[in-house]
Length: 79
Figure (cartoon, rainbow, N blue to C red):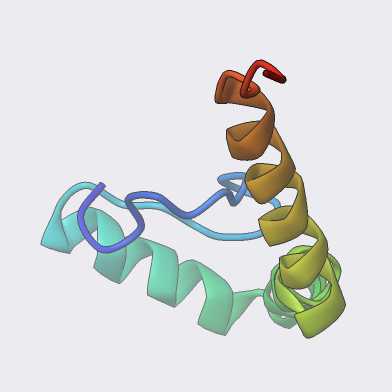
């Protein structure tokens, strides 16, 4: 799905994915005709972003990756 690649979002819950212009138009109309669905998807997506992409979460993820990377290097042997 063009435009959403790499996003860790759940189709139908946090985003509506479409693989053609017609499907995208249908998804947009669906959201316009169903305000409750639009609100639910908007709220779920907002919660996901707040949980996974806010500053402290990103810092924690980066620190985890740095620890993993550092642990993968061999330790020098004491002389």
